[in-house]
Length: 318
Length: 318
Image (cartoon, rainbow over all chains, first blue to last red; front, side, top):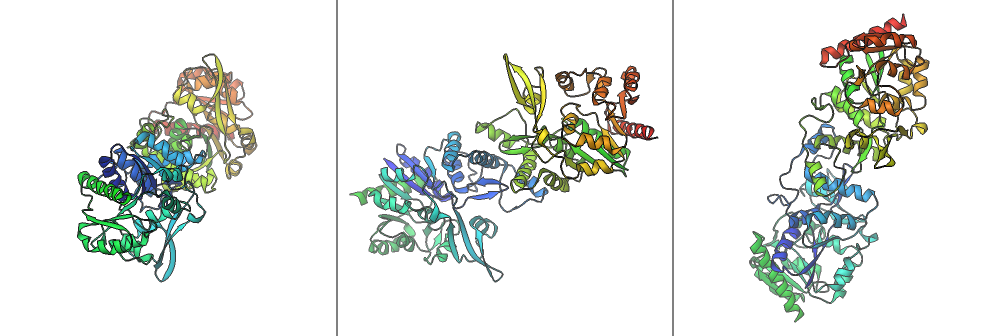
């Protein structure tokens, strides 16, 4: 079975670990969000791609969900001593090596997709990891800071400001001019199932869908498209998706997210058992819906979620 | 008193520490060799400039003479895990930060001289450190490897091959087209004394002198030019200067190095007490010469050497 997964960072990566356990023989292609990418200290940092790569490759810092395990911060301390910022983005020494290799390869002319493939040769994530695009797309968030409207990089909003102010708009700058990375459309055309993990529907999956051609390729694939709600009981399971949903005028509710994707894109939707009441609303919108436990507390629970998603896909297909 | 010092790496840096102790009120400008610079992992590494900066700024690894103190090697280990080379150049995590800052600034359009000044704002070396040039000059060494003549980067010869094969020629590639960095000619024009520390006469001081205009500016300054022999008892005090001297057809002897510089450039020359026999030969070549202890065993011994050099300069002037 060929499964294509659209993934952001932590939520997507953890779901993928469950999916691999649930479907060990499946051929999994991951289309990763690159709208969170940022240049720091002259280096290209791809937080979502790396979180998937490190998580599936066994190098992730499990507690924090991103970055490397057994990390040290000598480079960061030195940069601070040089007075070189920003200091709010905590890159560890091991992590720096990844960005150094990536930046060197990009500088030598390799596209991000080729660089990602090269990095994955080491990590052997057990999935094919593709960036959504080789072009530069950068998610900016419009905010009101001290009475002035400003657009900040998504990472500045998320990490530095910790989403402490309202997001007035979310713009994937460059998305309109971007093209899907090599392999993305082909993977979608050959997919048996497309899954949306419980990633952020705006700045993760929404950004991937903003790359012209990807949304259409999913719709035209003619295979079940099933998603898992990142909203449980009216709040994000982790992160600050509510702030992002408000920015695009979508209620922070399991049913509202499904309706935002819409029945033209989504065939099936899993909500948490706590949101059983949302099932009827989602089905009324033309999307098949089931309520099952959606907390990724451990690998078993996550694998069970993946099995439910695949079962719902088969139900949709039949 | 305004002193200009032409410096390579370890020998130059240690001498400068002695000079600062010997002449605490002097205004010291260092013209640093950049022919050893190398691009590693997409980063610009300036070994000689950094050795001077770290040594005078209190950040040097004292035992090894180069690199940072309290160093760790997480980045290096990770690069190796990615299979990215070369692995024979041992950059530590702290050191990497310097190269990251430098590379970012160069990428932003600052010349190396401005970058060096910015790095020195942190280290406060107590001297004005100028690269010999802002242009790219790279010292290559011609060697015979398995019967084939090849040109390798100086660092490859020095660090990877450990000068284990004969150097057939030494070429500062790009030197002919290079210009002295801003401030270099001005410093020489205003100098009261010019010193050549016991640095490598071929690949350190020789490379600096290969930048068009520098040799002429020293000669035209009309002030005492005094050097200290890096050769003691027919062998280099440290490093492999003998290999480099052979490549340019100069005997590994204190007197031969002075004669190589020549009386047109050099006014005074200090040889070690072990080479008292060389004094007459050097003086016969028109260069005033004294035999004094030249081993930089500690700060006191090094300061004494600097005082001898300054005394010889005054003798020449008078």
